[in-house]
Image (cartoon, rainbow, N blue to C red; front, side):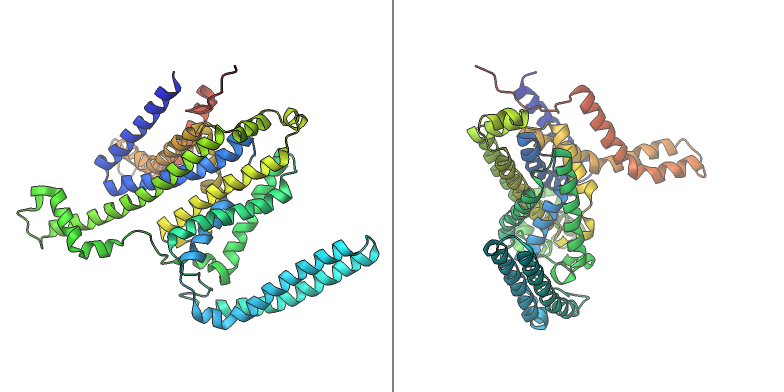
Length: 454
């Protein structure tokens, strides 16, 4: 089948399924799924750049997502003045001690000759610097976390526009990827995967335990939004008029103060806010998609695919394999970081405890595999398919269980068992879909298009 025809069919089917949810359940539910599909598609594209372009097995997608989410907090949340007064000075001293320790350590390493004297001097610098830094850091963190613990207990952010945090989230994830790349990119592919997974878990552990920075498991709520609030829309005359016009004559006889109109306003405000998010997310997705396709079809992209297919041959031709791997690893992580900041913005809160490998690593890998690694549009459709099935599997299973239970007695043990296991059908369905795709279309729903040789 022609690639264009296959792409058209896949996206058409996905559109029909989303419309079916809108008509069958509600438009609020459909738009909520659609927005998460858009964010997941961006994450999938970031991973596809690493795996599909260069063959890098990144098992630490969760870390880039979490760093992007943290950036949304540090940029958009208002600074907590009392916390800065309580421990800001000590924290600044601790940070300065860290910088001085690093600088002195580098100077000792470069200026002194190798030997016992250099080793002892470097050890002394590190121990003294660590002790000095630790003393002020512990005092600062304790003071900051004690400030109105139920409400804040952390430093807050910079109070800047939340949209700015999306770009910063990408930069922060790129910085973490650079550090990880310097440490782990020289390892063999399986060791690299283990290293990224371990570093990811370390990062999540830091976010859960450093309350002065992230509030830990107490979560950060009330983050700024780039779209209007539902309450504001429900009180705006222009929006009420728009809702009346859109619903036409169905509300004409009810009157402006009727319960029917109030219900319509409530539902319409939710739909409007989700549409605003959809427009923002879709703009970001299309921008990244266009840039990714340009990069893939450029000489740089062709070189990456050559390295992916045969590293030895590429290195023999003078290509710097490690440097190219580092580049694409940083770029892919930056894209995932942007998606992480967008997800935190959509939720309106930052919850370090919710970052688990199943959601933010395994599912993203499933999206890439199902869609077709190496194909940007495949990553997008894979994200839509995977997240749609992940969300709709439970209600579909409950509906099916209801049909079965209607034929069973009320006190039947089987009936109760089916109700208990229905929510876990999404796991079974994901595994089944993955097996079927790998069996009948191992290169994905939209396989990578192999350039024809001249």
